[in-house]
Image (cartoon, rainbow, N blue to C red; front, side, top):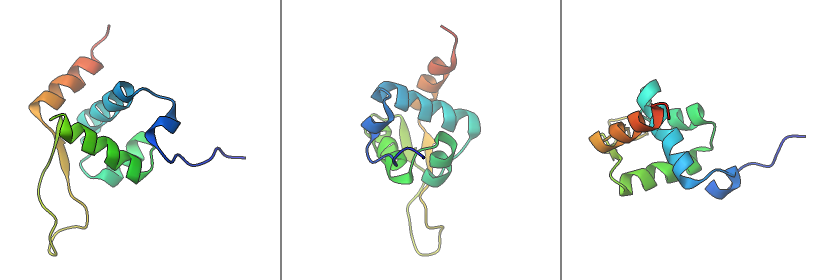
Length: 95
């Protein structure tokens, strides 16, 4: 029997800082830009991944790379800010 699907970030059992660092390191190393790509890479549902992205945007660690409009793809892209890259490098460095 598989575990129940995650409905909120707290269901992961990880701290917010740990989840933030996992997302930052993954985006930095894998060079993924879309929420669906990031979600697949960190194995979280897209709505929870988007919630993490929104939190990181509020902290100034990620930014949108454009706007959605009829002629573009259906997903907005995201990238790390300079502060996000610095935090990712810090999280990747050995203790």
